[in-house]
Length: 417
Ligand code: ATP
Ligand code: MG
Image (cartoon, protein in one colour):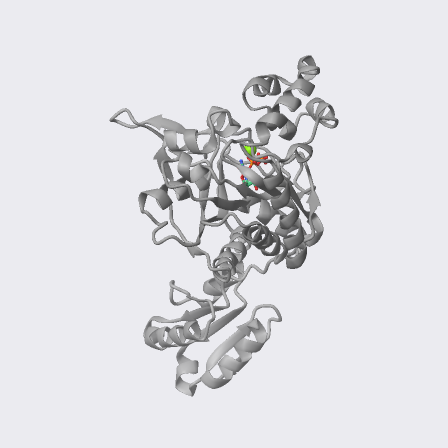
């Protein structure tokens, strides 16, 4: 017996109906805003993530699945989508001719984290990236897309949009100094990870989930008090535009993205329903990233939604219909031709239909139909063919009657709706 690898999981049965609800929606949703799909590889060179996410981040320091290829190159399963999309944008010169370019992607991501509620080692993200504008109007629309997409599942009451500005290379170093000065005083009370972060990536401490660190951070200086004029102006405009879009938000000055390439806008759609895994979707502006990865100096902004977490929230709110088989068709060897033509007709009409493959026993086929949760059973036997009818059994009510082909469609539409 083989078991799945720790932190990985199978998704099947009714769960897949929730997943498909999300998967069926984002394509048309993002297209409406002019985003096109980009399919990126699952495997990239490790150094793309080291440069693109940052050496001092948790992801790169300890969460990547990395191995050495035969030629010695280090490769990693992608832990996120932004760096690969940016790599593709640069490599394929998608920035020519210069304009605004907008992409969405979907697929599995891999991080070796401690598995817990809402946290897996293979999880799925759907995300967008927009390149080519520094306007806060773009930031506002990107945030609006995250906000309205998640709310389209009727889970508004569980979600809260939080925004922040994390400044830029002009103003952040000054803030960083003030923050370190403050945190140094509590050095001995910070967790081990945060002691490490203090020298390398102190802003990340604001994001620490350990209670004692959260306490210390409560009174820490806030980046919003240290923004330069450019960043402060951008943030004011963003808030104004968010009002124009009708996005309800709160400012949370503790949100960080923790990396030099990330500037100005940072945001998270958070929930209190999933324990410590609170962010359902998160993103930010990364104006320095494309250049840092060897491309031209083009600004960008994007977000990623954790689909596993989104599905958990939808499950709390609504019971999705498990619609597998509308019609289970039972026949006999002599009437396969008639049965095949009937199932073709029904499938063209949009019904989910399966044939009973083991011909000859109505009783045992009926049992299988029942176990599959089929809504109806259709029987084509000697009598039915002779009289030009079909036997229709409604599996919910138990009602059984003979109908003509024409009647059948009408009746099925009523039963299955
Ligand atoms: P967290 O603070 O929860 O660790 P993060 O900051 O690492 O999240 P991002 O890198 O911003 O997350 O990824 C965007 C989204 O992807 C998150 O908001 C979350 O919904 C989802 N996500 C991240 N890591 C995991 C995971 N291990 N399992 C499931 N979903 C995840
Ligand atoms: Mg994380």
